[in-house]
Image 1 (cartoon, one colour):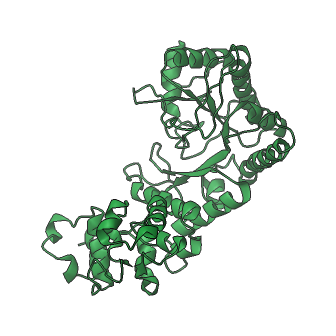
Image 2 (image 1 turned 90 degrees about the horizontal axis):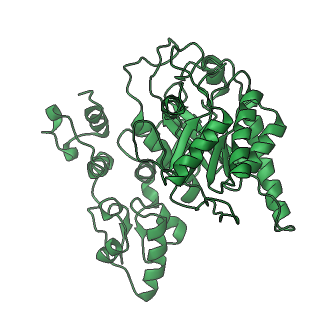
Image 3 (image 1 turned 180 degrees about the vertical axis):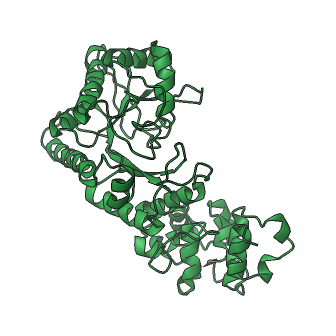
Length: 430
């Protein structure tokens, strides 16, 4: 099998991993070396089907000793198998870099024989790139659960970012769908990486030239829709991962049926893309907007609203907080207003020093007034009608985000229907 045939198989096998992101780290090329890493802009991947790329996103091998039911590379699946040698992959990476095809490497792998054996091959590849080829570009490497701690440490010294995929939101689902894996085996390297990052940061305060360990941090990925966990369970786990392991990102991947299995949704099931999108929106609220999990979802509403994004849903459920007066509200209160983001909230604080703000002035500052108009006042004036009831407000917000009624229900007005009617219409129940 030629190297290009291997590339075709192993880039296609890597496309289900969503955890590609900008590097978050800068590194200039050393004297006599090649390549550098920029802190922004690396956010695509290279695949055999010709999609726009800047990372070579590839597996070391798609041969796997595990039989995870949701994975196209599972042991029992009949699919073409291939494995790169470290030299082949290192030379391929350098050839692509010299042709300006890529800016870095995203390397993962199936479990070839054993976790340790797989990690040894990945480490050898990175040693060739960093040592013999003196490659200074960005490298994101996946740690294999169950690997010896010394190998995790060595990989972290060579890569810019590492990740350990959590895969499923609960230990029960992992046991059912991935019987060869355990939650402890996944969390152990995640904890080791977090400790290594903290140790390096402490050492850098004393020694400027301390070798960096995973300087761009770590991330993880969860599959959404393959198991029965609620959105609240997934979001609670996400918040705990940020707090305990200091992750840079938690990625959510809508489950795409690729293999037939009685434990999984049917092959003709659509991927829950809206649910994935809602999780990313809620993740943003956790990290940048000061929301807690309990504010976004609770036991009474454990899943996201079918019509509203999480922030709008919170605003609709807390009418006592509104309207917010933009000329007096603090930064935290402004962030709670739908249509006002981190940047526009800062602009409001700066602009109102020069005089009172108006609705038109808010538009110029980047506020999305189509949403914000229902929740704020500017100098005591409310741009939108304050007489909308809950169902009417939900209908107006849903319409603003492009939600449309089915053809057989479009003769109904949003203002003539209840919230339950709206949900049924937009989910095709009536």
